[in-house]
Length: 299
Image 1 (cartoon, rainbow, N blue to C red):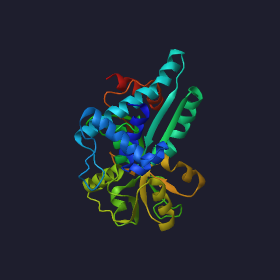
Image 2 (cartoon, rainbow, N blue to C red; image 1 turned 120 degrees about the vertical axis):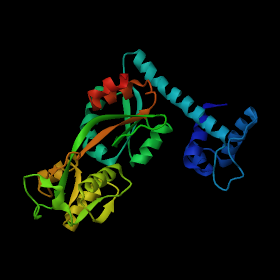
Image 3 (tube, one colour; image 1 turned 135 degrees about the horizontal axis):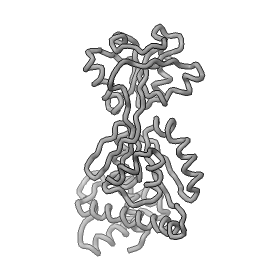
Image 4 (cartoon, one colour; image 1 turned 180 degrees about the horizontal axis):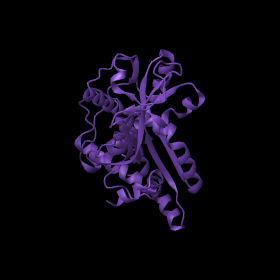
C-alpha cells in the first residue's frame, strides 16, 4: 500500500467519480479501480457497494476512508512538527467560514496571524453553515466559523463573540432616524432577508413571533452581501449584523437603526472536532480570534 493510494481513495469519496479522482491524481481510471481492488483483496472486504446505481461506500469503506484521512492528516502534520522542533509554527490551516465572517471579521485577523506566523499557510473556504459542519466533521477543514454555533456528534462548538443586529434601509427611507425602533413599527413594511434555512434568519423569525410581529419578505437570499444589495434596489428593510454594514453606512449608501429587542445579538463562534486536534496553528488561531478561546479549549 502506497501513500498515493490513500489520497486517491479520499479524492474518490469526495467527488464520487472515478474519472475526477483519476484526474486529480494524474492517473487513469483503471489505475484507480486497481488500487481499490488491491486494498479489498488485501483485507478481504468490499469498500464500494457495486450493486448500487450511485457511488456508495460499504460500512468497511467508511472505516477505510476515516483511516485514510487520519494517515494523510498525520503525514501533513509532520512538516508542522519539524517546524515546532525548530521553534517555528508552520503547516496548513484550513478554515471554513460563512461569508459574513470571512469578509468582515477575518481580514484583519488573517493579516495579523500571517505576519506573526509566515510559515503557516491559511486557506479560507467560503461555505454555508451546514456545509461547514460537514467539512469539519469529515476532516476537510480544521476550523469552522459560523453564527449560532451548535455542538454536534463528534464536534465541539465555542461561542467567541457576539454581534449586534441592526435594521438597515436606504438613506432616504421614512424610518431613518437615530433612536432605536420598536419591533411593532416593522410590521407591514417591505422586507428582504436570508433564506429560512439559515440560523440568523431562524433566530429573527423566533424574535418576531415572540413579539407578535408578522414580517413578509419580498425576497430571500443565501448571504448578507446580496441582502444589502437588495435593500438598495428594492427600497426595503433588512436586519443584519452591524459589522457587515459599516462600510455602506460610512459611504452613505445605507442607513441603520438599532432595535428595541433583548435578543437581537448574533453569537459567533468556532466549530472543531472533539477532542480539539493538537494542532499548534489551530490553537494559536483560535486564541487570536478571541481571548475566551484559551479558557474554552482547556475545558
